[in-house]
Amino acid sequence: MKILLLHQNYPGQYRHFLNWLVSRREHEIVFLTQREQVPETDTHRIIRYKPHHKPADDAYALSKYFESCCGSALAVVEECWKLNEAGFKPDIAIGHCGWGEMMFIKDVWPDVPVVSYFEYYFTAHGGAVGYDPEFPASKYMPFIMRARNACHYISYDRCDAGQTATQWQKNIYPESFHPKIRVIHEGVRTEINKPDPNATIRLGRINRPITPNDEVFTYMARNMEPVRGFHIMMRALPDILEARPNARAVMIGGNDVSYGAELPNGETYRQRMEREVGRDIDWSRVHFVGQVPYDTYVRAIQVSRCHIYLTVPFVLSWSLLESMSTGKTIVASATAPVKEVIRDGQNGLLVDFLNPKELAKRVIDVLAHPDDYADIGKAARQTVLQKYDHHRVCLPKYINYLNRLLPKQKRLTM
Image 1 (cartoon, one colour):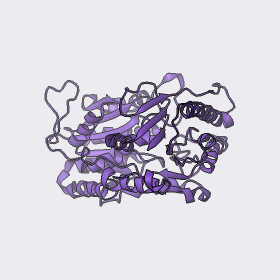
Image 2: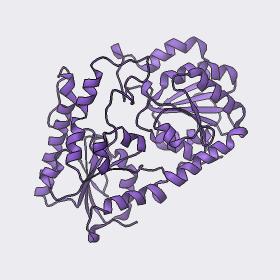
Image 3: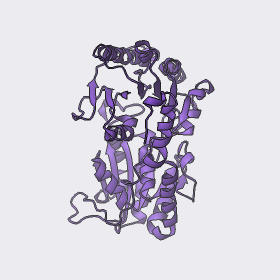
Image 4: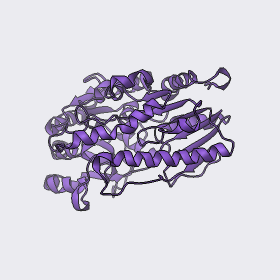
């Protein structure tokens, strides 16, 4: 087959699927992306494109996002024209539609099946916006959110099928979108994210390896920001560290903003929270390790006695399922779509996102009585094995879904 993949941040949600495709060594794969620093490979062709147009910083807020989407869509079209002229016509085109890249594929190849990833429908109610009263939405936010969905409508009209990761993510789209969208998670590599009693990590100036016998708890987010509950985590730290004098917090993630608003004057949320709670924390036991290599992140979770996952109602992070897959006791926010995965007291512990005292209390109890929660960690891994294992569960579902669009002689096989 000739397969076209598209994601502005290569490989995005297609990491596992791409690895499986190239391992077959029987398909011609082209991946279009905006990401600059991607290692060259001989297993597939990577084409980097620059948006045809980017709106000015002071562009009209209600149309700025759509203007950006159009710039990306047109850049993709120009690369598709070049591919077509060079003799590459895909048997199927698969990509993330959230930034506009999928809007015009059908105009280049009308008979090529297009499968779009519908990750998040912007809404002023029931989602991330306005959930935390500490960060209220402006009176213009409902209009900005509705305007941002313009590219979703075009992408839906111009695709043959859609995918999203959780039922909650599908449900926030209007019902008119539902017929084309199938809930299929990308899956977790359970053979990598697994319990390991021999795992070790190094922390700061500590002159010995940290092991699962140490009292470590972890928090992970791509970036330390309110959407992923960083401020709540920081406000829980003083109580946890005071109650557990041997505990260490490992904080994994960067200091930028992936979602939501940036702070003025270049301040980071980490700086703001350190200023707020700094006098109440023993900083020698708090380890900000930054955005670490994947294997380091996995070992940190394997060492952890308790992993904390917080989010407003928003896209579910891969890190939650990966941490569950390692058999950890998870303390997580009782927000959608977390409740789609975790049942309180069965395969994890749920707390009110807005209540750092409740979060601290739960974490303290897990750290103090790990044996009492061992079955919850085991149940967490079983949940992932049964519902989110990449190779045994998610990949077969996805392949079957794609094959519905392909002739018999072109279908994918496991």
